[in-house]
Length: 535
Image (spheres, rainbow, N blue to C red):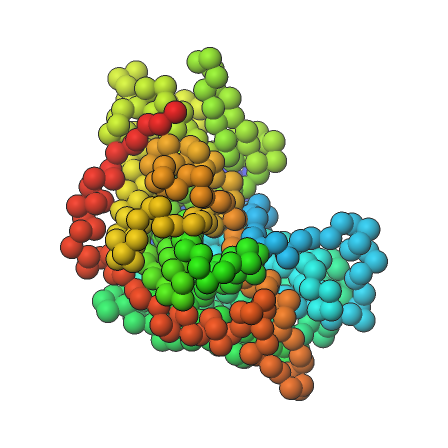
């Protein structure tokens, strides 16, 4: 059958036959059209909506979900014209994201030109996030970051959250996911080398970090144990391998993946702890909490030499998913919002025309709506906005369901934090610092986040947004480790008194708090399902 695809001002015609994929999402993907499929084809997010414009020369205006539109249904007709709404033609969209670590600074253009040479050696640090992959190139001798870049994780075309990817990877799509990661990583490393006038042969070590699922997929490990009780990973210890084995690159370069704490508190969080150690010169007397805000909220509490960790499924609301006008932290995303004298004011990433709302913008909007009594303590919009939501700009609005998604995420984070403190036997006043990390954590307004209860007001003055601490820790490791694969390689080399042996020790001996089995979690969760208001 003949399928005509309308893409704004573009038009594409393809043939669908018995050899085509079984699902319209996959059919479109084969043609280079990446339609949003955030829920992993479960038909619940609604973002892969299409409109049937014409069926066998008869006009139509029927709406369908691409993930629920099968090849068999398409083959019932000779000619179909469809309009595709939420799609992407270029999977290499650049994402803005910060990273933590005082020693990780990017050189100025003049410094960069003088320091780069094809005769010098470099290390590369990579953080494979569920949404975004971040890269940094580090000068081997000076330990300075000379280039950074980021790109969207192309796995997102299969599903936005970790759970959907675990389920699909466990159902025969593991190699598809692994191929996405490998192609993303290899293409960006090659591009960084080209842009900076060097070669793959000049790279000595690659540090790769990420959550347990991303690391499992990269290594080709069976993911089925990550999605069902007792949630057993194949391996969360330090992995030392090389590019031939894991990336298929002929040039043989060391690849090191740091250890994880648990299935749900992975290597990315261990790297975050290392970034804080490297950047803050902490003493053993400091008590700190690290919260990485993303699809999951992973938390680490350090008190002396003891570490307690937990994780809660916050949902992807802070990454723009499950929010009707939500987007990732890309150019055009509304990142800050304020109501001034009854008028709306906002900032967008890059100062571009607004395209949607990212996580930091969502926090600001909720704060402003609560402050101005447009929503009550239960998150209910006043009657005026119940039906169509609160308009931010043109067709961008925050709906009642969006507010509920926020409440679900906020309640999970806050309840998890409360239990983490209780299980550690401490109170707010015992905490010296609270670090908020993650892409969302790089631009969050601490005052507004605490005023609406995401973090306790008692920790407001102790809180610090540190951005992507995972890449910061990977940079710290990359700054110390090196040596070609045919040289003597010392993995125990220290980074500011922290090394792989130390990371193995703290991850192996950490206490895990399993919130899903905790008797108080549900009660605290329900208690936190409200929006506080503090000026």
